Image (cartoon, rainbow, N blue to C red):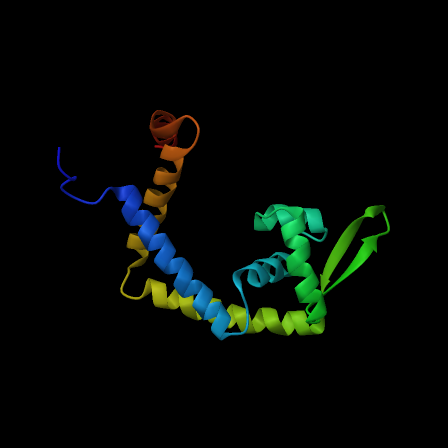
Length: 156
């Protein structure tokens, strides 16, 4: 049995995701940021999460990993941490003026990167891409393809 006639879709998606991730990291680094700092700043700017635990869940990292990033960001003057008066075990994280400026700077680079990615792709194509990526994700989720097809039929 020889190699498949074409590259498996999972491998294509993985390679593309890695290339996009490296390019996004480079765009953030060029602006003096990083993916972890961007995710934390964006989470705080969104105003939905203020405690370290909430931010860790939103960003998708473990508490100790977030603490490491927050330590660096606090040393750089981007955030402050204070004990939550309602729960002394929790820390509330807030943007400083420097953090707000860093967010705005990174946002401009994130938006420029997004425009670069969208170049030559029509809105309808982007909508199709989002649906296809969601379908791929659903196909590998617990329950897999049969459950995903059932959900598609229900939403039709």
